[in-house]
Image (cartoon, rainbow, N blue to C red; front, side, top):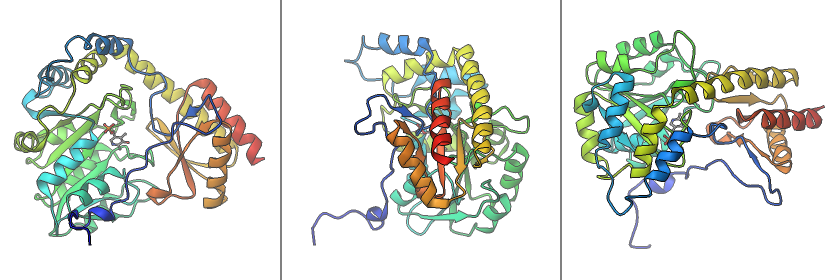
Length: 362
Ligand SMILES: *Cc1c(COP(=O)(O)O)cnc(C)c1O
């Protein structure tokens, strides 16, 4: 046996598969695979990023002070309760590292965002899943799956890849009925896209609860800066103090900090992204439904599409769209082999996709 071995469970982790960006033999690819904002970032963010080229010889500000202040002002949160990281994904690892270990359970729904499972396993904890109802979080099913060993419950609201959400009232009920020792992590990566009146990303609950709720957010989705890796978390003071102990000292780069601040200041750009998404999400939902496919109602910037022909048809459609230079996202890894996930693109991209599907499915 090789003498250098990782801790038990590490080799059981199936590495995350990112959305493809290229197709062999196709030069102009349309990528609808990674829930990226097709309008791109605010021009102000790009300008700030370029400006940061002056000063790369210096370490970043280690506490992301100016960015936390900008977030505090925008969201009316005490900056002491904000932590920034290199993508919101990092928080899942930090939380699992700090609050879980071998013998502990981490709970989430059956088609939840895959990072929770990876982070739990990396910490040696045991992932536990609860069934969904109609591809939507079912809080009773989650509560049924809690045990004395449950330490963390991760709830993506809205969830990826399903695109569905639960109301703020239901999130409150979940917290109320959940044992107090379980940390509820609300992952609101798509919050800026959601316009439903009964939705709330969760800051109120972080404030109202007994130091056992935190909310994560990201600049990767509507702010269109996934290449820079910036996320933030609103935490009760004791949790912020824990995360600040386990995170890396310089966990957000200078270009990322300044670009994120500039992006936060461009409300018009965010509004344009939200409006574009809503218009084309509706259009694409109607078109795909018209082709005989089932689309799970989405509040995010992507659609979960179900193929009546099952996994074989989903795989055939994936191959056909790829051949035509359009990359969609297979979600078999989420237990949904009969589905593909489609990110809302630019007008010509959405139209091209529907043309390819119409030709192939008729
Ligand atoms: C995309 C996504 C994230 C964001 O990840 P980053 O690390 O911030 O880029 C978090 N949660 C969900 C559910 C997502 O889909």
